[in-house]
Length: 380
Image 1 (cartoon, one colour):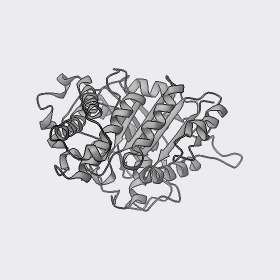
Image 2 (tube, rainbow, N blue to C red):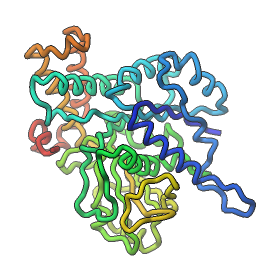
Image 3 (cartoon, one colour):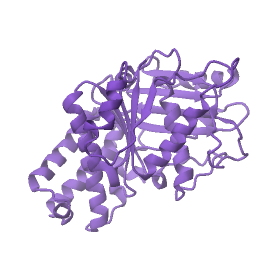
């Protein structure tokens, strides 16, 4: 067995986790004569049960790891607003004992972006600083981090007519996040699959300068796939409008027939990214749990076609630079938010330095002429 242990903490993450585990339940087969299950259930070992316990390494998690036959690593999802500090403390403790174990973290950012913050408004400033601190910690401890935007900030395509997302309804929006994230990581759980957490992360961060990745996906209508359908993708992570050559990408399609695959392959043939930097996986349609909200039009009772992707790209440097610039400007004006968060000046200087180190690690030449501040303005 090659077990992955899952830890989730926070409202968005826990709602997403409920949908995720309900989907895993759908993969089980119980009657004789049924098809062999799509996934290897021994990989998704157990769910982390007590995220409030700051001594998690001394309690339930340690017991889970000891019970594993071949522990791959952690897949973590947490809300930065409520559990950013916990996640950093937990991962620091974990790294003290498991220095080389793979960690993939989905970090749900606050509901305010540096572009939209009111300068000098302490609640906004504290949220952005908290996100920046969490990104700093994940840069140090996580093997691959996917910074997830709060649902209200997702970039939705006007060309996606079959899915209605109410960003104020956590039950509905978390179902979308779960379906896309679950599908994007499906290669880790496929029965007989060759991927494990280390190889999956190593492929996306082969350059060793791209520890942050982007998640996107789309639900697709019945009938033959069109190129416009592929382009009608929702951006769920930090993104930039700037067109950049990705470092690597994992595409997972669900429910594509042969004609759909021909359209998809024609589209990838025209892209600049080719195998092995682009790896595509094709599986059965996404099984809709009975607990799933009614967000599709027309309603889909059992399964739905979708395309999900995780990619690494130099384009993420632009939104990350916004956090660095915001914290740096707040430091220069002596913003009171640092005091309320208990941060000393040396802590803030170190935070700013780390954020710019992250940004500078990406190849600025690949960002094109419109890099830096101009790119950040396109994110709204």
